[in-house]
Structures are given as C-alpha cells and as structure tokens.
Image 1 (cartoon, rainbow over the protein chains, first blue to last red):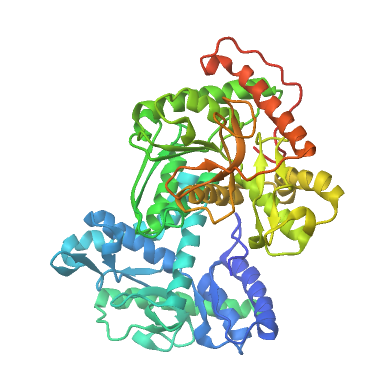
Image 2 (cartoon, rainbow over the protein chains, first blue to last red):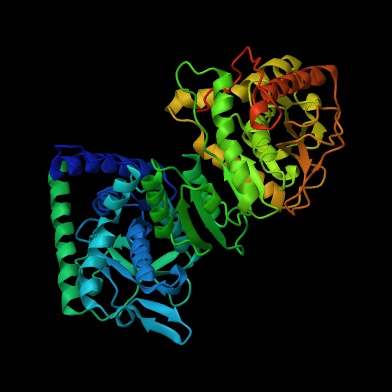
Length: 246
Length: 333
C-alpha cells in the first residue's frame, strides 16, 4: 500500500492523519470483502504504522500477523551508515534494529549489531569506539536521510524506498538468512514491554512465510527510554486516528 | 529518469547475473552533479551486495576509464524552433566527444549502447570518433520498439507475449522504423497465418508501435523511462545470454558486411543473434517482400541523409542537410 495523502504546506498533523485514516478505513473494507484470506499487507504510505493499524482494526478477517509496515528503509540506511563509518562492505554489517514508529521518534539501535571480520563477528559499538557518535550523529543522520536525499535530488527517495519494500517482502516470503534479523513494523504482542495492539517496528526473523520477533535481547536504559518514547507517540497517533473517525 | 531505473536494475544483479559484481561510473554535468550525488546516496542505502563502487564525474576521460559497458543515455532535447538538422548537430557534438573519450580510455572491447536520440546517427558519430574500438561493438537502441511490437502482436492475437518471437525492427529509431510482421512468429507459425487482418498488419500495427510513446505521454505526462530502461536491460542481456534457438533480437548496428543489401557505413536496426559472449551475428534466415523492401529503402534513405548532415562530425567533409520532415518518434523527449 504505497498510496496516501501527503502533507501539504499549512496542514496540521491532525489533518494529515484525518485524510489518511479515512482512506485506510475504506480500503480495509475492500480487503475484508474481497482479498484472499491469507493476503499479506505491506503499508508504506505515511503515517505507515497508524495506517497499518487502522487497516487491521477495520479488516478483522485478515490475520494480525499478515499486516506490516515498512521500516526496512531506515534499517538499510542505518546499515549503510555503519558500513561507511567502519569502511566495510555493506554485506558484512548486520543486526541493527529500528524500534517503533516510522517517524522522527524511530530509534536505530546498534547495541546488538555486528560486523563480520576475518576473526568472526565483532560488536559494532566496540569497533566504532565512539559512543557519542553512535548516540547522536548516527541517529540523526539515519532519521534525516530522507530530507538529505530530497535536498540533493529535489525528489523523494522513491527508488531506495522501493528497493527496501522489495527486501521486506523477499525476506518475509523467502526467509531471513541464519543468524540475521531485519526490522519490520508488526502487530505488537507485548514483547519488550511494548503495549500490545500497536503496529511497532521490531527485530524479526522470517521462516516459511512467517515473521517472529527476536526475543531475549538485553535492553539498556537509554534504549528503554527511546523505545518507550516512540511507543508513546504511537499511542497518541492511535488516539488521534480514532478521534478523526468519530 | 531512464538512468534512475536502469542504475537500480544494474546494481541489483538483474542484468549480468547474481555472481557478477559491478562498478557504476556516472557521467553528469556541473548542473546535474548534486542530483547524481543524491542517486548515489539512494544506491548506497539499497545495500546491493554486487555493487562494489559508485563514482560520479563530469569528465568523460575520467568516467570512461576502463569501462566495459558504456550506456550513453543523455542527449540534448529539442528546443523551441529547433530544426532536425540543428538537433543532429548539437547531439552529434556530444557523441563525437564521447567517442573520442571512449577511444582514449575505455576497455578495448567496450560495448556501447546509444539511447540518446537521434540514436542511430549518434551511434554512427560515436563509432567514427572511436576508430580503435570495433564498430561492431556499437548499438543504437531499438529494443523498446521491438518490445512494443511484440506486445501489440500478442494483444491482437490474444496470446501471452512469450509466444511471440522473431520480431524485427528495421532501420532508424524514428517514424520511418519498420516493425516487420512478415518474419515474425506466434507459437512458431508466421504471424500472417495467425493474424489474418492484413490491413491491420500493414497500417495499424506500425502506427501503434510508433505512437506508443506519444500515448504514454498523454496518459501521464512523462516519457517512457521505466519501459525504456527495461528494454536497455533486455538489449544487454541479449548479448550476454545465448539467443534461444531460432529466435533473434533487434539492435541498431553497423551495416558493413550485411547480407540484406542495405547501404554500408550506417547504423541500421537489424535482426541479431548472440552466443552470449557480448558479440553477435546478423540473422540469415530472413525473407523479404516488396512491402518490406519499400519501407526498408525509405528508412535507409533517411539514415543516409542524416549521415550527410553530420559529415563534419565524422571526418567526411562539409555537412549537407536535406531533411524535409521531422521524423522523431512522438513522446520522446
């Protein structure tokens, strides 16, 4: 689902939300009545997480595990920045996580990311050896990459977004490589203390056409705060979305 | 816009296969440099495992260094009041310069695909300015027209397009192009036995293929960048994978030594076969009738006239332009 109503100059967040939830509620109805029972959905149009949530709420026959939103672009951008910083090939960096909302509150987390070296996998945090960069500039660069591309190209990053959508679908259908996870916006089941019933980006592995949230990762204090902040924004968006529909 | 689609296809491994790493070198201008940087950023963000290098420059003598494939997409579009002769001259200068640069620094067996229009004459100018590179290596893109012709035949016959084969586009990539229904086949049978509507074949078929670009522009205001990039990929793949038995593909290539009696020393779209080694041979099992020959003669005359018009760019003296009509295909920017 790539179509949505874009924000125009002078529009309030409430107005953008209002236009989009109406669109996704209507499309949910079409899904409910006509789509194949096992239809898989990828929502790209923003606000992606909340659009996906509305779709799910108003198309109850679609299994909740079949609805996702795209955070793979941010995931790929984060890996791109890490490999550039460490001067390694992009294929050698993996297991970054994008937590939460596909918005400016998204949290790119490198605490579990690794780089494949000749002497085995090494932690990105150790190799970068610059926590300040990782906690500040790295995060803002990933978050603002879209704006940087608009500035350079005078066009939004359609091509890399399309590429990441292909990656998302490919991995979902054909499975993630062993030892590797990716980021997907999926229906929360309460993992990592995130309120159930939100569409939240988690680290997932995929096998036999299904995703599962990677469990048991240690979450430090800084990460906890950021993960909660982006969850809080999603709860507010959900509330705003419902108020627009009533 | 064509490049945007094409670069992502190249980087993904779709063109040369999953085991062939690729380095992309992008030639831009001062004006387009920042936009190219943006494209490079997007390519980086896409994490293509086969993409080992992306570099950008404005000097062809640097960008073309060691190139094994040169895809020459850029050309100057027609400005208001510009005559066809002016268009040929302005673009010719670009392709003369690029030919010289390729001659100086590219791989000695570089394959060159010219997309920028007028592509046949641009390809001729390019190869004339690159005497150390085999003339056989230069191609003018007519694959989009071939793909469009296949599509129209499939639609008319009510078959899926993979049932259509042996489709040739003869001649110039302009309104004198000749989509050949005499030699084309559907499920192995001659098209004339499957599509009985001779009037459609002789009149509507050609028009539909030619006007497709114009129809697209009317529909969504943009030229056919995406399908053009697909056809470029098809064109490259036709040279690096063996041509299926009995089939052939169209490409605008140098006519020297051709078995069809077409004038030598021009770039003319003809049916080709490849062993998948980057090289090709012209197909011999082709038949002609008066209708086909008439149209081939007309497009040949146009290419000879274009050649005279750019004589100054190919080392053949003073240019003489006698090009009465504008034969650029509608919908081409």
